[in-house]
Amino acid sequence: MNRHPVILAGLILTLFAIAGSGLVAFTYWQTADRIAQNERDALLHQLHVLVPSGDIDNDIINDTVTIQAPDLMGHAKTTLIYLGRRGGKPVAAVFSQVVPDGYSGPIKLLVAVKMDATLGGVRVVSHKETPGLGDLIEERKSDWIRGFTGKSLSNPEISHWKVKRDGGDFDQFTGATITPRSIVKAVKNTLLYFRDHGKKLFEQGETLEKEKKPAADEHG
Ligand SMILES: Cc1cc2nc3c(=O)[nH]c(=O)nc-3n(C[C@H](O)[C@H](O)[C@H](O)COP(=O)(O)O)c2cc1C
Image 1 (tube, protein in one colour):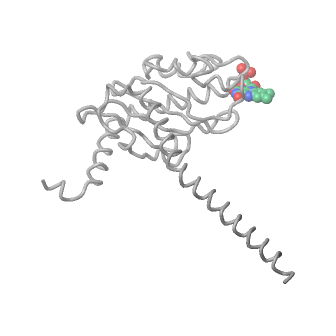
Image 2 (spheres, helix red, strand yellow; image 1 turned 120 degrees about the vertical axis):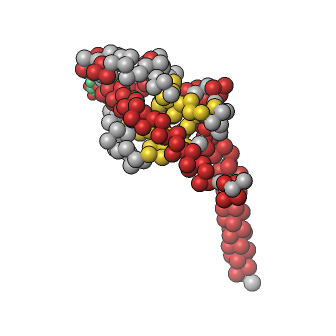
Image 3 (cartoon, rainbow, N blue to C red; image 1 turned 135 degrees about the vertical axis):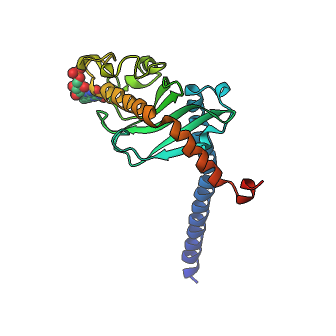
């Protein structure tokens, strides 16, 4: 008889444990979709800052191509590129790339290049640079990153794609040269890649799009 309270307490504890785990699983299940959707919305917002939605009519988030260019693209094995088109014609490519040589670690960037080989813009997606020093690369902390918009390999000329400290045209920050240097190099390398492969990217994208469609579509 004395064992009943112990068994009852054990049962209650077990029920609480099951209910607790269930609640956690349910909350995760409920929020995972919403988190993914929020991330997607944030990405789309950033893409549209760089490539205005009025300039393109395709589903840029799902029109992508992956390249392997470790020398130019910060030694990342692959780089994802979002392709903006209007009426099927190429408008801009947005490179989602990781700059490996930031001061405190990798810096994730979006670099948009228009078909005339000028920059639609550059934005920092994430970084671990020091607050007050390297973090001036963030759009909300300074104008520096906006300075890339409209630039190209002829404006300034290639040899000037460096920070001023290294003889180039781009400002460094007071007491922080490493962070801006790494970004200027990465953006220049993106422009070099686009100069040599830009048009082909869109053809690859088209091939991939066609491959995704069922065979029936292909034949009529
Ligand atoms: C605690 C600490 C944090 C730093 N963070 C950064 C940083 O985020 N980005 C950066 O470029 N330099 C940073 N620096 C400065 C670099 O060590 C280096 O001195 C500087 O980038 C070189 O630029 P300068 O030649 O203009 O001084 C930091 C230095 C210290 C001591």
